[in-house]
Length: 353
Image (cartoon, rainbow, N blue to C red; front, side, top):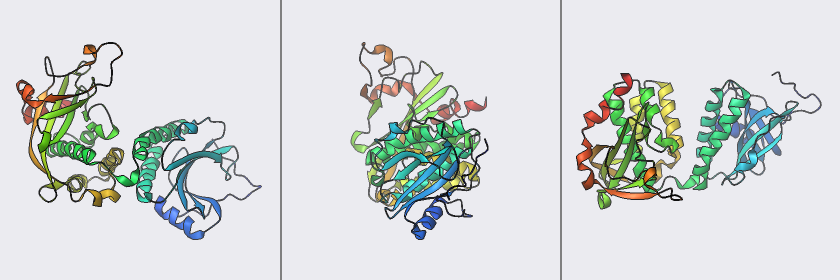
């Protein structure tokens, strides 16, 4: 659709920059100190015009997407998002267009917000229609809800750090096998998007549980469907035991950097991995929060989930009971152990068959 630019009033936007960086755009708008709301288009190919926005003297940074004013966008459902203000307003640069604006309420986590905005901009550029682009924006906001609800400045909790370390540990092992494309292997990691299991392929899945020495033989299972293999050909549980200390072992940051080096020969795959980290709640701005927590691997063990494996599944529950969390002891799972070779043969290697 061709956009008709308004001629009666000048748009509240400044000349376009050469840089694609939303941070550079924000800095430029902030330095201008123009009172009120200003915006500058981010020069990317997209079904939507994408803007970096700034409000002076309130010192509020944001991102905005221009869309047909006849399109109904349910922005109200995001009113409860902590640290963000979501609103719609006329796009003064074009007739019959509105702006869906996402604005950060304070600057405590501006670097994290910039990373999220960049991720969102890249996602929108991969769409071909305005409707699809708007859908991507709304879906991303749903994913951000969890991140903002816990407070972006706080970073991951110790439990979340440990869980992410375990997922990245297994991801690195998959990549080192070099049995398929790196992009495909990164694509199997769905735990970053809070999926039911951490790795998912065509007809298989792996759930990763990482425990420290204080409870190394007890695994917490979240929900009656996590170990339900009824819709899969093969389901595995991978248990990684670690010792946590301040100095001895590998940090979460080092695990991330090692994986980035492993993927550094392909910019697209590296960007794919960094996007996954963002979805998992890992941001480089939080790295100092994680540098004193080290993990020393004490060994991993895989189990094939089948038959009488100790678990609770949906069909075991009485009517009205759901969202069950329970604990299993690894000592009761010994009969279901499989080697790492068998684990990979039945999962990532099997995808190439």
